[in-house]
Length: 223
Image (cartoon, rainbow, N blue to C red; front, side):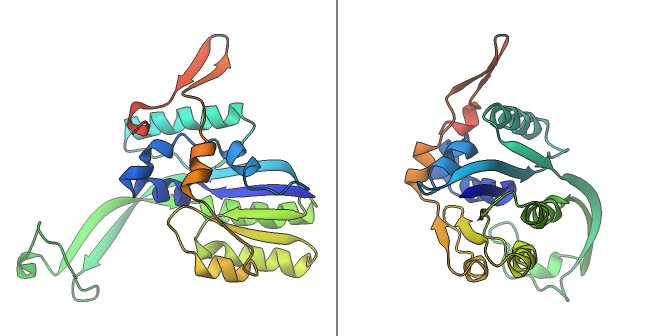
């Protein structure tokens, strides 16, 4: 059975980043993770990693680029989106403030409206949705593993399932995430990533890219 993994990079990253105990697992070998999830009668055709580089933090961008290079050496295909600067408005009368303690306890000192600049991720979800449907039409998989708890990707799965009812879809939930809608849309074919998966699926501390290039696990991803 031909299998393809579609991995939402930010969903996976934030699941690890939001828990101090999981920071040491960020140097994650996505190809090996896929191998540790599939059943014995399956072969991995491709592992697709959907992500984007941040443009506002040089250190994060450098670590991310090293990680992508290490994954590429393992045969993972990266599909890049991007971050775009946006200007947003916050109105505390429309979007009530619930809690800002201990930074602010008296909400009356906050202006009614605040205009601020931030960065928004673009294209990642669309790229992932497009590949799920496109690969179904190209018959590149019999079994699609969708690694995310984000239900925004559900319409793509619904479309592919409607057109190709013989194909199987499994929701793979990053550690600590529930993703109830993803479970439902995949007919409750679910794999929940646990700490044992993460332990068994780490890249070597030193990844050899070529005779002249080696990549080390970032120090901040070691503990």
